[in-house]
Length: 377
Image (cartoon, rainbow, N blue to C red):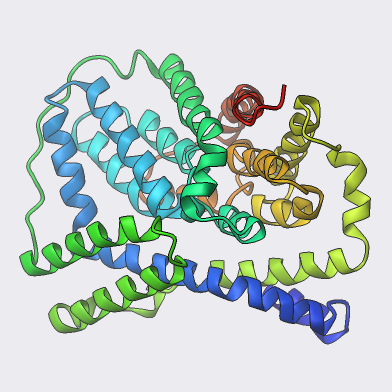
């Protein structure tokens, strides 16, 4: 995809002034994505997520349903503050292994992690790359952004959880066997990682451009690892493929906008901030995300989401909607790679059917919540 982006620039399909404007807008966002991806890998190497899951296993006190609720909390907090990809890549394996070692069916925990990775990614700009783009378009602080989307964000968590409980209520009954805690490999390294995370989370919602605290935290942890455990550092910690894919998508969609994509989509996206208009835009976003991917779907439709409420409706579609096809979000593909490495099978037909049911309930209810809280009656 990066080659496609370079090609449209080289042949003039993407005008140079449009490319410069695109770079000014997206370089800070890409810097944030790079920093957070590296940081979460370092936090995992330091053992932060293993310690958290050990605590969850103890807090569950042998009850499967309580353990599941604690996993829900972990997945939601991870998604909101560290992004959906963090939940897909790092939270998924630890909660699946937690279930396996506890003698519990892992599928409910695996599906919980990926559904919440997508549907809990609406509240803060840092939760999803689409949110960072929307925040840039709106020029809002993180708190002001959350003030627009808090109600649909709650729906995005609550409705999928109800559906998951209804589907897996038998598997979530009973008790699980206790587990031994993972040994701490490097105490000072773990303390440094935990302290970095505690400082970073409020910094991400402080109103400071998010790339600065993220880059600072990643640089600090990189220095700590160079001191304590340099042997574990590797180039694969940098998400080269997702970054190249993202840059290429930015360039290709911007070239399409330069050649008439916006007028073409305007009719299908509806108009205004009435409930039918918002539902139409959210449905189009969800459909486009499941057809191509949520990032190009957002980029293509952003120009027709010409108000804060319409932009929030678009985010509902592209964030809460990608639950049907495997390619609807990068997080789902990363999640599947982790499950395959853990030998946890997934039937895509069942995944798609369950996801379709979740989307049919979650997206419209989230739009209604947005409409009601925005005072558009």
